[in-house]
Image (cartoon, rainbow, N blue to C red; front, top):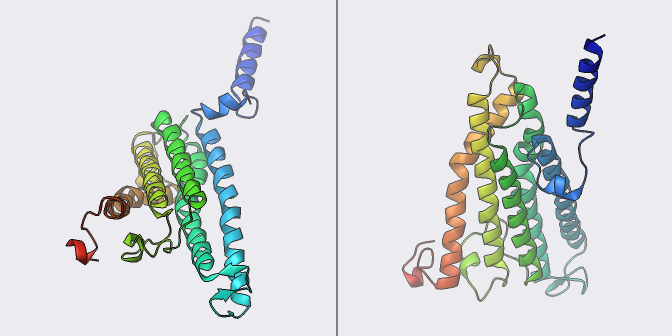
Length: 256
């Protein structure tokens, strides 16, 4: 008889802490440290921009269906400059906002701690900060679209991306957005590396880990090593374009 209240308290505690039964207010989501909730927020945001990037792809393909008339495509609906902007925004959204954070941030946040048997990732607050860095980068990208658009191609290759006369006004904002998105990827990668190193259960060595964990670990290593190189290059383009610092432009002493 004495065990019945204890069992009831344990069952009630588990029900309150259940992921599906927790508080569902907006603030509880925005301030959550639960890796599953953060993964869900990533997934919702990424899939939303996947649809937006897909819309730009449809516009590009639609323009290619109809031969150009003079300097315009699709009659008078899509000009050559607009076409350049559409394929640039399609590529930038799909690569920086969807593909790069898609598997690690969305899927990895949900499954990695579960496959390790861990309560959460190693740094839950850094995990939430990574999501807000992603939101900040996305906001910069949206402002770039609203502030004149981007037509340089998603790779932002010089000299076109540094030429203020031929490229659109939203390029610096888009570059800063991609730079901030890089911080999100770096923090996520660092978090996953430490989580796999430190929170593996007893008996799970490196060669007992599931293949999914190996995939997330190798992706995290690539994020930490490769993303800073891309990010600092984007920042140099911003400095040259804004402050005329000679990095890529030969007229300023640079080298493309």
